[in-house]
Image (cartoon, one colour):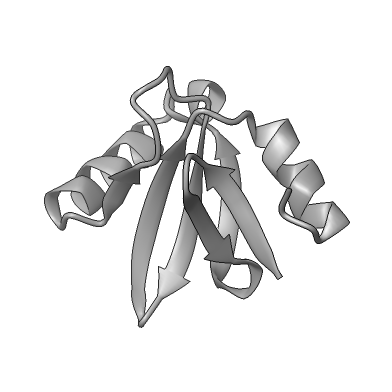
Length: 86
């Protein structure tokens, strides 16, 4: 199965480590440090230039890839639970 993250970006569900609400989690110092370090490693991909609502951490080829999405965390979780990614 695949999960549609917005625009033309889909990821295999098996690679997803977690789906997070960007507004609630980016307050944490640890989350800020994690996102900052992943950005320095060029592991962050903005799915859209719209206001970000969530981020999805995937493990691909032994490395983290962080997708920043304009789709809400709740919607992404529903899509993942439904298994259809639509």
